[in-house]
Length: 631
Image 1: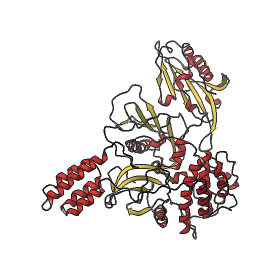
Image 2: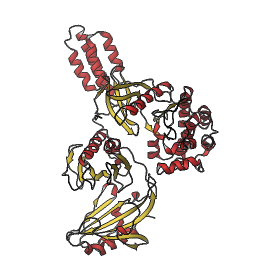
Image 3: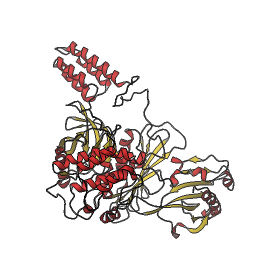
Image 4: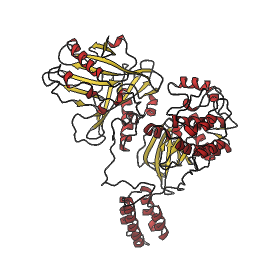
C-alpha cells in the first residue's frame, strides 16, 4: 500500500488535503473534489484490498449508500481503481471518543442531544434493512454546534442475511449487546443497546461492561449485568430501557423520542448541503463568460489556494478569444479569493477562516502532558510485519509502544518517545536523523521543533526481524502526522496517577546535598517533567529520577526494602552500568488490556565507579523521593 501525501490526486478527481484521523477501519483524509468544487472525506482501508477485504470495502459502500439521513454520513461513491477509497460527506467535527477523552463525561442533556440524532440515523438504517453492528463513540462525529452523525458502516449487515460465520462476534466488545456477546446475530435491538452503552459511557465515564482485555469484557457482556448509574440523572430511565439485557428494548425511533424529551425541545442545527471552496462561485461565473476562462478557472478551483489564482490570471492573458475578459474576471477572482482567505473584524462564520502567516502556526505540542505520542505511531502500518499490540501504558508517560510478533521469538518493541531538547536549537522542521543501527536496535530522530524531538525505534533480541524497516514505517507516519499540526490530546490521566507529579520536585535540596555537587547543579527537566537529571559539578556522579509503568515488581528487580512506607527494590547495575537503581512502587493499576501494572519512581545514581558504590546514595535519595510522593 503506497503512502499518500497532501496534493495527491485520487481517481483523477479528488485532491488530498489533510489526514483527519486513523482507526481500525482505515485512514480518513479531507480532499477537494475538483469536479463538483466541494470538500469531501476520503476513507482508505489500511490493508491490501483483495478477497474478503475488498468485499468488506464494497459492502460498506453499498450499505451506507442505502442510508439517507441528515444524521448519517453519506457515501457519494467508491473509487475502486488499484486502491480502494470511499468518497464521503465531509463534516468538520471530532469523534465522540475524542471529546470524552479530552473533555471528560458529558452532561446528561448534551448526551441526549447527541443520542437523539444517532437514534434517528439508526431508525433510517433499520427502515431499509441495515443493522449497523458497531455503534460506539468512535463512530459518532460531533460538530461544534452538536450536530451529530453516525459513520462507519463497515461491518453492517442486511437484516435478512448473516454475512459472518456462526459464533463470530463483530463489533467493539465494550459496546456489544449481551446476545451478540453470546454469539447470536446482531439485530436492530442490539444497535439500540450499543447506542445506550455509548451514552452510558458518555455520562458515566466508562462503558457499562468496563474496560480491559476484550475477552474479559465479552465475559461480562455475556452476563448482561449493568452497573448502577451515578451521573446519568434524567437520562437514567431511558438508558435502563435501552440497556435491557433481555432484549425488551425500545425501537430506535422510540429511543429517539425518549431522548428528545430529555433534550427539552433542542433541535439539531441545519447543515449546509455542501462545503465549497471560496473560489467556487467565481469559477462558475468565469466559466460562463467563455471557453478560454475554463482552463485557468478549473485549475484555480482544483488547487483552491489564493496564490494560484494570480497565476491563473496571468495564464489567461493572451488567450485567442475572450482572453482579456477572462483575464479581468481572473484578476477579480484572485482578489476576492485572497480577500476571503483573510480574517475580517467581526467575522462569525461557522467555518473558520484560512490561516494566514501573521497568525503563525499552532504549536504541535501545546501541552506536554496532553500530547498523545501514540498519534505518531501508525500501528496499522506495522501489521505487515506481524501481529501488533498497541501499548500506551508501557514505560514512561512520554512514550508509546507497539509489540510486533514477527515470528516465534520475542516480539519486537517499536517505540515512539517525545523528548525535550536539553538546549533550544535551530533545526529544520521534521528533519529525520538516522542513527547507527546494531545491538538489536534501529533508531530515528525527528525534529519536531526547536524544543522537541520524537525518537522512533525498533528493538529486539532476535536477528530475524527487519528492525530498520519497522523504524522507517513509523518514521514516515510520524512525519506525515507532524505536518498536520497539533498532536491530539491523549486519554486523560486518572487523578491518582503519578503522571500529575513533577520528577524534579521529588528530591529536595536537602537530599541533593548528600551527594557532592548535586545541590549546585541545574536540573535537566525531561518531557512533561516526568524525568529529571542532575549532573554533579564536583565529579562524574549523576542523579536520574524518572517514572515508569512496568508489571508488578518482583525479586528480579532487586533487593526488597521499605522506604518512607513504600515497597522499594534496590538493584546494582540495574539501570545501565556503573550505577545503582532504586525502584519505588507508587500505584498499582490495570492497563487497557486488563494486565496488572504499577506506577513507579526510579532513582538512579551513577558515575565512573562500580555500581555498588552508589547504592547508599541512591537509597537515601529514593527515600526522600518516596516521602515526597503525593497521597
